[in-house]
Length: 305
Image (cartoon, rainbow, N blue to C red; front, top):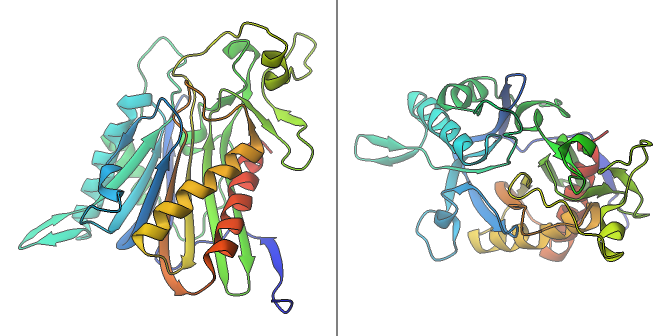
């Protein structure tokens, strides 16, 4: 493979996949559309998830293609944004057809950003708008869509946390690429995958980063921000995958979170990764999974840059 360059490249989506965002000044939703369907997989590692239709993606279930993945703010309330995505797809005639009925398969996961007195969350209308905004070339990142209310490093409370957001990344080898979009709203810190240095997270009064992992290991009692966290990703690739492979790739790709968030997969995070396979390219699974891990880690770092 020495004639194939392994590199990060400009963010790219497989043919037939689009990304759209919608938000207000407190929360938002990010939609990944595959209107004609894509092979889907998912892996939920965090202990406090808020998800929709993830059971459909289990290997033994009948459905093997889905039409959208929704990444939303609003905690469990934000799952209502999926209804707007379903309506958009139905209006466009996309979904699983049964006689004259069209049922779009829309999976989703949420982050908890209810950090204000009012219950403001992405609803059905916002999900529909995000779907209308979807485009095949998406360069928006940071405080956009589901990343609007996202934060990192909450062990000293929200007032001492840092901004999170939406991050993207693409890794390519030859004609095969893996792209990732991630919403980072982690309890832990975002760290440099190579050095372990804290890049975003809990801050001391002097503005310096605390280092959450080190703080816990020194025996300090954390201010546990229960349920107000979670990092969620969607991996998209033009490599051809079976449903079993898509689920395995989602599972392995959590190692990208391990490389870039510390601590991760806590009792107070609902960390979830979806996979969409839309293409016919072939590559060995070990190489693809290594690409996915790196792309996930890079997307986490990108979210705070």
